Length: 231
View 1 (cartoon, rainbow, N blue to C red):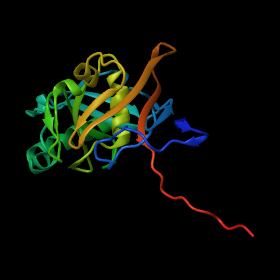
View 2: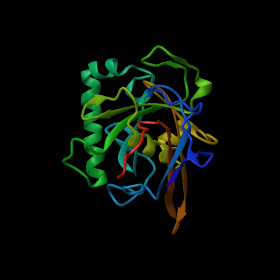
View 3: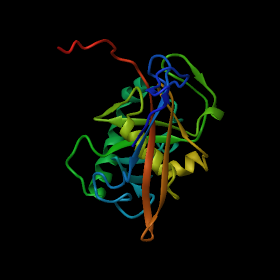
View 4: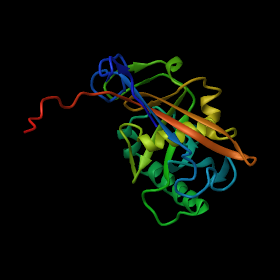
């Protein structure tokens, strides 16, 4: 469901909303994705548990818009603010992350794919410097994370992965919830390119966790204007 701001009967374009990694500012468009749980496995928590041990590390396996594996950065000897270049250069880390991802995939019932599930390292709020040199304080984020896809660390957090992270942050017992605490309002995700606001609502359905929605934001852009000559 899209929520588009309107002024004088037309979609608004001008505004002060800004997304890290996206040039300029504009009016904020809100996008609600309903019932995103179980997109790949049919279950929000594919193993029925919010966390479990895999290869000597705790992990949370969550499936909302995209199946994801979340692990603590500190359990891998990281702070969580490392640059993508530093993460990609650490071959022993890459091998361990892939081993964790493959084992998690088997437990989720989706083995044999190099693309899903994706794996992300999460950490509690802390200050960091983005790739463009911008400095962010720990008070301006709710969770810090790095996501790995196809063996490479993303320079920005992939949107479908961020959507799953937001849902996981609202799920009691997950590692993401542990890192984010009781974040009120939007969850502010600190990633290599800056801070991404995202929201989610999780409730119960038939006694089990159910992802009601996940919300992301976009900036409005005027991409074309003109006249069409109709005979």
